[in-house]
Image (cartoon, rainbow, N blue to C red; front, side, top):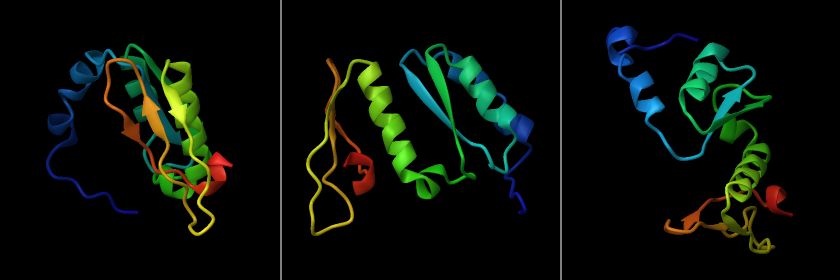
Length: 121
């Protein structure tokens, strides 16, 4: 696989570590065990974000497309552990996907996440 670059990576990415270190919210970092990017990228990002957790999934670079159920389960668990109420509706039998679960957290607007039907059964 050929990488396309829009400038020198060291110039484009120089400010990212400082930005990551300022993130104060709980953060979930996903890494594919077969990603074309080195594992050190995700590991460094997770180490720089104060309240982060890294999840490694048996996938390549496009983790949500390759392993949607595992991603959905990880997200639901992450939201629950961090005090969000996760409301998972029943699966609609006429579609492959369930209605989007609602994630409620004090002080935040309700978020919706589209999950594969298998992840919420």
